[in-house]
Image 1: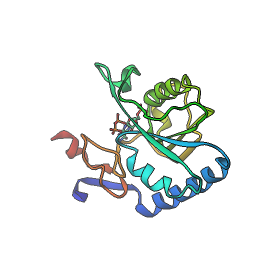
Image 2: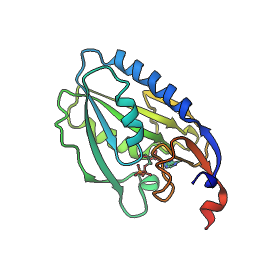
Image 3: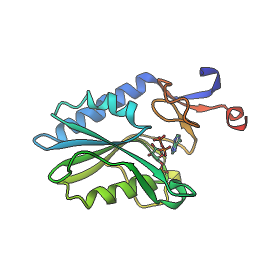
Length: 179
Ligand SMILES: O=P(O)(O)OC[C@H]1O[C@H](OP(=O)(O)OP(=O)(O)O)[C@H](O)[C@@H]1O
Ligand code: HPA
């Protein structure tokens, strides 16, 4: 698998150090709150699994599955919910845990939808931020790394559903895309 990788963008060590830093900050900020970590499958599962163990507050977790209508969520911004959250959001302090904020269309839609359910608060924690591709005015409240406009894989992120199990974040060789 590593023969397909052109370069390592973020090593396992860099990822783990940053996740610990984010977890420490979230621990402070959510003292005495009703923290609910909301994750959109599948890309963010690896980040969530690591992050939640660095947060020293009693937290709940819940998952959503979304998919795009027709020509794709990234261009249209229209998202269909395939699996909704199980937990009632009223009074909860929601932290949406995402692997990457790219165009921002997915998160913009999800944040708006969750806001309608009367949570006490709602914030976004994105491991990666690719601001060069943003199409909506949306920023994460917690960002791990700001990255250049390159397609990245690993640590949960996929290309064609593969490479999620790479323990680091890398960039694929161009020939992998063209086969
Ligand atoms: O900011 P955007 O341009 O909307 O892109 C970000 C979204 O794209 C990825 O999900 P994807 O649709 O690839 O599904 P996955 O999580 O199952 O990989 C990622 O996990 C975000 O949810
Ligand atoms: O760079 C990326 N890699 C994988 N999935 C993604 N979804 C949005 N951007 C990316």
